[in-house]
Amino acid sequence: MRLDISQKPQLLVIYPSLLIVVASFVRHIYTEQNVLINSSYGIASQQIYQLLESGFFIIDKLSIVIYIIGGVVLTKLAMHKELFTRKSLYPLICYLIFSTSFFNTQNNIFEALSSLMVILSLDRLIKSFNTKKSNFHYLFTAGVMMGSIPLLIPQGVFILPILIISHLIFKRTANELIISLSGYALPTLLYSYILWAVGRPFNTVVNNIYNACSEWNYSHVVDLIVQDNQIQYSTIFFFITIIISTIALIIYNIRNKDIQQTPSVYVLMIFSYIGILTIPTLLISTNPTALVSIMAIPLSLLMSSIFIEYKSHLSTLLYIIMILFSISVSVFHLYKQLWF
Image 1 (cartoon, rainbow, N blue to C red):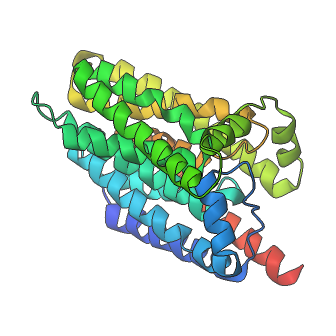
Image 2 (cartoon, one colour):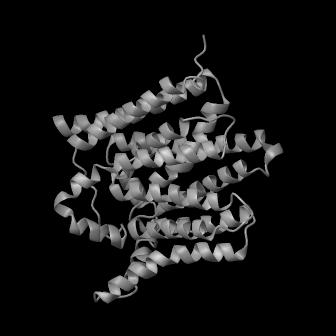
Image 3 (cartoon, rainbow, N blue to C red):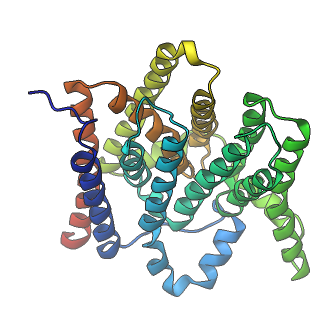
């Protein structure tokens, strides 16, 4: 009898999700995070770290909670917009796997918050496109949340074009775009003003973003990969996931070519563009994996389309491999910490 993973969400989605959460939580409790919050992170991240440095390791362990919230919101958005042929919880478990398992830096609280803010921003942005009537409050808050990300992760500035792209896809007015961009600029301007008021240069935030995003080469990526075997395996799995997700996107568009003008296809296009915009940041030497947790958003939706639309032994095997990989990463880090 062939196992149909799309017919048993309680057994094959909820339980593995809980297992991944527990494994990640135990890993956070018993392992020490060695992520250095330096100039490759945003001004707000650096100042929060300096303020709470003595107890920061406790706050850092809450990242899995942030990822759970993000996964729930993302899954709810996918259901509400009917991105696939049926309602499914697969975006939740895929997001938990991809947001926590590729690289150790993903378990940083700032990267978790950045990923959550992207999801919440897109949720508000897409809600504003539900009707022909302008919803300026949704657009503005979406812009504010998106604009707050560079204060935490400077590389988040690369996501700015998604505001323009989404307005073009949904054919919205120039006034709506201006509202979104105004909301995007507000956090940087407000934080710069506060820094200026306490005696620091007004352009501190802008300089931080520029310096963190101006070094383009692959040397740091190579150094990261050759550190140990676990990172090498994670990198291989990461790029395989990108390749499979790209194939899934192509297949999705081919199979749904007759409904290319529907809102659900537009929404998936927006999430796909998020992935396209974040991939170049892998070449930024100061922090090449900074936006991997944000890449997990489109990857989780595209991989979910495979499990939902294809009921085969191959998709079942891929699903099992993903779960085992995520759990093995947590077990491996826990083993290194406790016995070495």
